[in-house]
Length: 522
Image 1: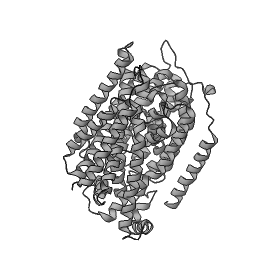
Image 2: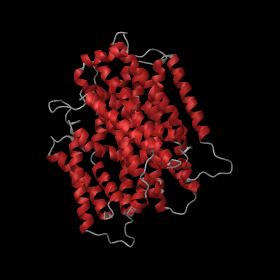
Image 3: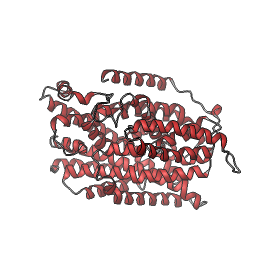
Image 4: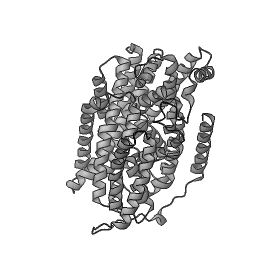
């Protein structure tokens, strides 16, 4: 299946327009040398609407659109828990974590770990994050994006991945986070519009032209098993989403790690003009998360009725796009590529931030700002090249890449959440306890996977979190660190946790909406 000339024209106009916008945004002020604050934190100038849009654009990529749509095809609406619970998690991050990070004036998560603990913890976690970002996140984004391009255009998947990498380099390598964040406004508008159109047309087709309401009612009647939010033990996908544990167990750990302590995401909020702008941006992103299941999960469920014999679930979204009429197909294809490009650019920028500021600058201190910016660009380029090489060997064998990504990262997230939570809120937590939690997370996760294979991975994440919590506390109490400069605990008395009436009202409204959604589809 190939795109028509009209579809290709729409897509080409999008590509050219995005490049022009990125270059205009990235232009230097006269007589101003670009420094690391400009390149990695957008000169701390991001307004709320850019923060919120960029958070969503960075999050919703090929792994979400293709992968989560595939999980919608295989599992159903239950996969939307990742989206709706993320909205609540964003509010927690905005109220309790972000004020501390902004008060500390950090560039990166490893930098905070060095301030709070020591260089050992920073280095271990910086290397870990670089490995996960390149070998899991960036490679999966490129692979699934290449898969979508191949399905839509008929080109080889390798050429699709190369296009994504080169496009990302063309507009983000020069401008850094500022170029990524402000062009994300375009990306999110296109993503939301394209996703809603696709869902609308799919439901209208199922309803045989009687409208989306009739189509949705027909879809529920034709595939009722796909509309269970809480899966029972006899469900074949219970291991992926184990019933009530989704609401009270390990998914909270996964979400807190991703939205609160993940450089790839939190970097946008760190670049805010001030805490109020960051709070408004987070609320904006949280409301957008409510829409995501309509945009990414619903097309996958609709494919169960419209295209019931797919060879792999991850083909659902690309094949659904093939059903769209000329013109709209080009728009939706542009929306998909927009999301992928944004995530590729965001991920590569975060990789360059951690490598340059947390590893390279320690080895080569006292260099010029221009030197560090150029090193960051080289790190981005190298990461993209490496991800291109390893994408197919790592991901080519998986039918549901989204579940693969969640399970792999679940080996490490319990320890990350423990060391950050205790590092933020328990003054007696020390560097040895942090290392015990970080390293123990991988060890305990592997042991449980081998010795208790019937334990669902989300439950495993929750159990490992509790074990790491005990380990971190015990090690901190009984094994003091022998270092010249003791850990600097966060002085919570100096942190302003008060939020505005707007933030509080939005938090209550979001909680009520999400509770209603779960009650409706229980």
